[in-house]
Image 1 (cartoon, rainbow, N blue to C red):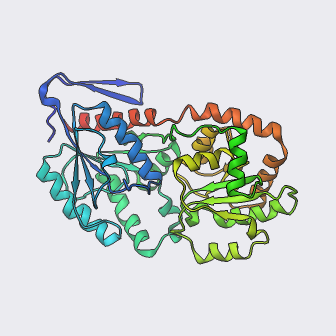
Image 2 (cartoon, rainbow, N blue to C red):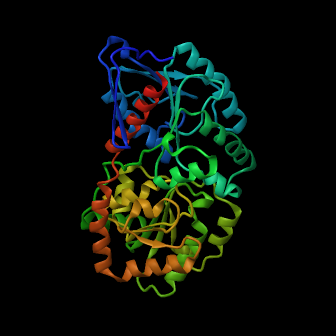
Image 3 (cartoon, rainbow, N blue to C red):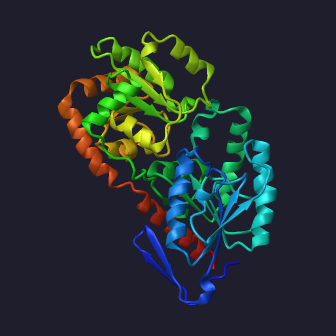
Length: 405
């Protein structure tokens, strides 16, 4: 089904890279990409993965044609070059019924009509009825472990269709060794079919000077030191135990430390609200809603520490963002977070508020510990860059090409 037919040489270098070199004019590919999560001003984890990788891949591989498939009007800033053609097809896929219609009818038809050679889906979804070779990206399988955190329809869709997507895909990319092992264990997929493509962090994140820290704290936290959380306010982000831990920490804190929360309340539940409303130090919790990158850099870089204690993550991009800002990190000792953090963060048990509170106390009281974590964080951040991520994702695309000839 592919146009690549002449002068193909496949070179395998260790177990990580497959490089395909071809020398004919017939080697141009038509690559379609599911870009429905490229939402201007609303990029979250998968959206950032899509944006950063596609920007680099389309720029570096101008010999190929890319078709970005949107489910609603797109922002022109997402069309990265003349080799990118935007395609808008409906209906907007924001509900399980509409997921099915969009991928199984609209996308399937468009892929065939455009004569696509390869379909890349950065959010995991595929068209089961299409015969086009496909590469899907599974960021995590949290819905298999904590289905109760999702509405019934979403939960049913994910647990019904993602095992099918895993079997359908020519290859799967995922963002950590943890997620790779999870896919193998839960879906019975061969290790040889899965490529690890680590996330990166926005290169705009960098340390801020003391004057900017003082200005930022005056603006956001009444001049007080603060712990910082960023992410969607989803149950698996573990705000309940973060609130409980902060209450425990504040009982012995003498600095009036605050807790800043950045993120949209899309998944704010009654249980989260109840715990928050019952906090002893609720008045010290500050919600900033979504922040722009420049604001985020200042807020992250001025924090006493990032408190990112989810009970399930496929990667955890804020960990690396904090490393780049020179901000100490407290994160969870489960799933992918120890893999990403290495020894550059304090690990806590996300199911034990006392463990999280103790980590907060150590950060607040031990300046030598903070300095060590900051230095190790800078070193750790060099491992996770979007340039490296794009190289790995392109290598996975080339494997699909090589296996489909």
